[in-house]
Length: 415
Image (cartoon, rainbow, N blue to C red):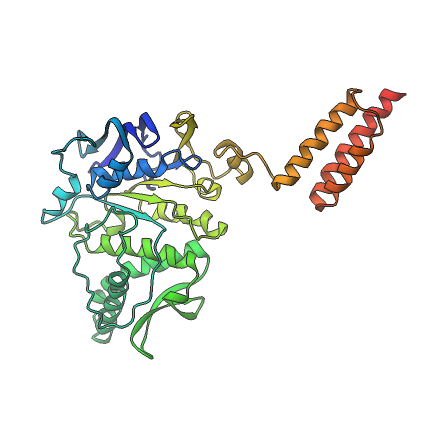
């Protein structure tokens, strides 16, 4: 079956975009998700693109998009639905009769594809008791693309506790097949979190002082609300997504929920994550959801450099307008973080601002000495060299090499 996938988006007079046509090439590895990474400095419209793309699924972000519209505003999304190519058009200034395709899906008995959106703005809190009035009654598409409202923390933790309880009952009754069916989704969350963090992660039930969900990290039981922000933020969106996928009545019931066809929008999910975890999260989800199409915005060179075969879309500012900075390029996990900072993010500085300024002054003065515009030896140059060399062993080595070259060249010149 051909996946439903977004092929391109065209935007006119919305936010920082006067006119933008963005094409999304297909993936090159059939065993991994199709990943598109949006990069660019603050204010280049990465989040705007993600919000507009969700219009294909739902009009949940319509009001926010209207705030960013100016002039004659519009956008359209080209997508492929099985063998048929379609265009979804939405007019921001006028009433639109277009029905988001996820709304149509939600009315069907079985589901062929789905859309979900997450950001890292909300925290996950502990479940106070198993007898919470929240239950797993929401349709999996409720607020599925609202970024900051996607997750119902109580609903997710209640699902964990209920599923764990049912699994224990099935195990006590000797029903191994039912036990496995209850635990497989939670096991996938645990496995993914373990791969991202490099720690052993397991959800468990604690009975004292009340029945609640706890998380075992390397064997130590911790309440959810005392977990590090990085763990909590990843649990909240990844766990919610897996819960939703598990509760969808998929048309192809033979395919596990992780491998169903869906589109996922992720807005700066690296927030709160240590750089080591930033390097792990995208490879994990790229392999976990092999039939998904994933759009992610990020400011992290660790995320960009963590995978092969993802498409990188660079945005840049020209005045107050944002445009594409070249054609899409494939990511390479063989590139260093230093090279990615330079090539993708346009950051070629390595040290603090003051050190960079002093290095620039040192090299300007060095060049003046070498061209005869300043006398040699030069007291100001020596003082600047000593100040830099005392900053760190690394800078000491750099300045020592510079001074050696200067003395060697000037000695030849003077003789």
